[in-house]
Image 1: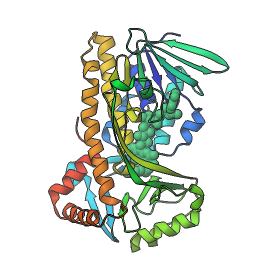
Image 2: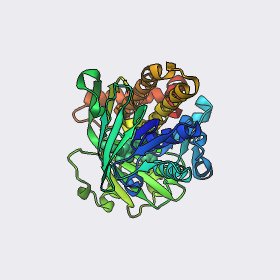
Image 3: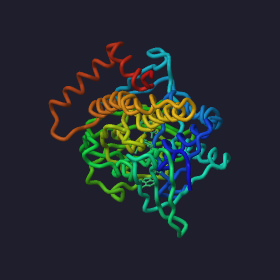
Image 4: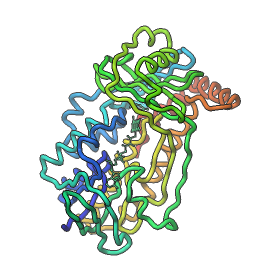
Length: 388
Ligand code: FAD
Ligand code: PHB
């Protein structure tokens, strides 16, 4: 088979890129390791910035998000039992949208199917060839057959554990990494959220987050030890521990219920440089990971796709390579700012082992954040998404 752009991975980055390229008349195929059901079963992001909202609209699949997404004009911190609110509208004039990654993925998959675009799910042994040559290819197995796709460009949108970044010779890539000494235990339940805004909780027992997916479905997270196993956390233990970390009002308002999904995710900061290797272009988690505290991962994937789709459109419609030549530098400039913000917010709100000095620094920083309008504005500006 021959196409213009072979996209590896049907997560938000790959699906969004495929849809945007299609709308500009650029042929693409998506090759995905898992089944659509598996892709949709992963519960991840919940908060999306204007950049992602705009791209989803541009991809032509924004109708359900516009109808069901919840616009949030602020967020709350609860520090040692005391609540503080940041008003995004007043501080930045902007807001964020709460709409689950699962729903975005579903809307993009439906849009792709309606347009009749090729997607090979359950593909295994995916391999990239000749990325530095003029004619790269992708081979894989699926449906009991071997497949080969010839293309002009390969978009590596296959997440942190994917094959794309690993196909690059080690001398051509530099990576930066920080692994945090804790994980997030997430629980999804069909109960109304405890608050109509997200609550980020700093408590000596550990960080907690009260989030949501809809007026009737909530998502909660607890900072847990990396040694913990999901079987250590029956639902009752989760709710008991969450209550210990919340303030009195949240405790009174919290409605617990059975878990629809429960999982533990490690926290990591990671960046690979550059993001282009010949005709292979990385986007999203394939190139960088942020700890989820700042709600930036999916948003960064969307901002990479914005730069990459524009660069490919310039290549095919204007015969210009300028966008492709600048893709890595442009994307990384935004990536590092989101890395900084996510690392800062993680450091500010979590409990670290043996960190008495760090705890004092957290308290001083939080006090400053709550009392200084400039500090609050800097937080809000980053949270709602920096301008392009
Ligand atoms: P992925 O979603 O990982 O998609 C990659 C795809 O590639 C997958 O479908 C995978 O199956 C496929 N693949 C892997 N290997 C191969 C292979 N060899 N061949 C073919 N296909 C392959 N971000 C936010 O912006 N806001 C939030 O509120 C937020 N909350 C989060 C909460 C949690 C608990 C977690 C874990 C993450 C959160 N994120 C958040 C991050 C966000 O979910 C990710 O950044 C986002 O999924 C990245 O999208 P992606 O398409 O780059 O990668
Ligand atoms: C979520 O709802 O899953 C979520 C929200 C905000 C975050 C991280 C995760 O910072």
